[in-house]
Image (cartoon, rainbow, N blue to C red; front, side):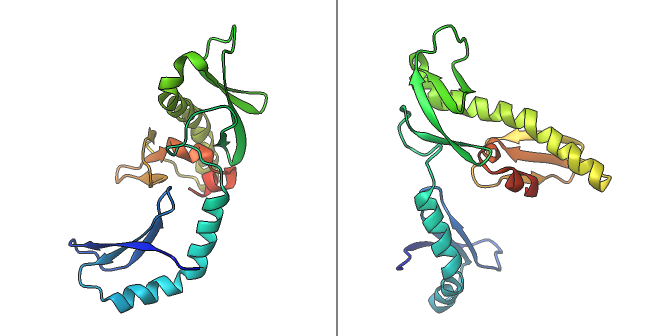
Length: 183
């Protein structure tokens, strides 16, 4: 498999090579400024098996929040499981976007605001689910954070500040429960 990639040469004090795959499937290698091409090629060759597997999985996985159009039948992830989206007039239901009977429902009248509604829904799920998981691990390890924050980060799923504040992206709610616990 021929892997196309983009190299970003850092002018900062970066000392290591790093690799990431964007949600569009672009392979990005970040390297120190003066890294020779042969070192980049060797790094890519060492990571080839991992890259091929991740690109294969990315090609098979359903889109969630990419540029794909919001329409009935689109697959969306929630806690690692893919569910269909239904764009409909939900009748008496007052929520504009909700999860019911193993599928998501987006009110047709607010389709143009659908992405914002979906983000809000995922963030609300994260605010209700993640504190319980943090509490579980706090009890297990005997230490805990000073607080929890839900962010809109796109590539960092979680972090801890020097003041012991945990930050999680709402996108974590698309991952399976064991991945959420890992983060």
